[in-house]
Image (cartoon, rainbow, N blue to C red; front, side, top):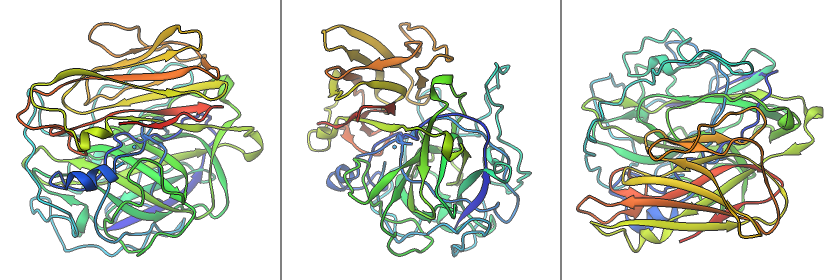
Length: 472
């Protein structure tokens, strides 16, 4: 397997803190409740979050990557073997590849923990395929879809998700995937599998850099990517999937910050509003990191676990403020007290806001039994303002709160959000709730299983307050 790193830089301005998507823990869906609970944590949506991410070099043996912008947010997972550290910039990460495999052969990843039950196909859901939605006409400040410029022809699903790195000097690319597509090793992901595992790597930048814009693209089967940076070296330094150093709750004291992540295969790049032009997030030089990769395969053919992340630089002298991750995790008590079959309930949570500032973006995350995800801002005066709502777990929403983004209006069956800057004050509270309907025959635990597990997590980024709550 291989982890590559490629340097370049970026003039484009865009702020988004990576948020982890599914703060879940654990390996394959057969993992114990206790171990999944321990891994129940962090964001995307870079998050959700802003967790560590792998470092990218050039492109795999059979093709180079394509230029890419960025936007989105990122969140968790846990487990098994010893990790692979990313290679330094300009040199492909030296990661030993696993046994030679072709798309049609299936081999479970080394060290995968627990049995691997076969997920069922959801009603109306076809086999996972490349993200090929139509790209709307661009508005001023928007960025084109960068996927598909790598000239890959590997035989694996999703070759058109590959992105080329930013131009030299404008940003850097982090790539987690095989170096040789004829020898993909543990990156192969067989039919019926679902788990969340981590890969070690080192960021490719030789000096501290700041980024403001980003884009992430993953192959079919990507549920979430959480990229986290650490101030202490990764253990093992190998090339295989390994235990996650943090379960997503952000309680590991060695965490530096998160890099952008994902809550679905493609996280596009967003424009930078004028009020955010001096915001940035730092990546310390050659920092140890982990990519937490939650994948599921509901098809009858093997998939490939692989993603590309492009970070776009902002001049250090331009950065006067750094954004902070919003982490609001709910439902962890379901690990020991699962949502029973037949339950139809709204679960409500809140997180206090300790100082004034602005919420820049929010991303919601739940699983297949989620009916509705809603967030309110409750003012210190008692006034409640709806700020976020989504319905489809397969299309988790990221909404931006600034002077240039026009969010969709609220409705009874479609995602919507408040439009405009979202200022907060000390004494306010961030509220979020998930309507969960368990129409299955099993109890739903807080775990990394889209059909047999649930969670209620809100990720995002803010300037000013620390909004960080992990609640039962």
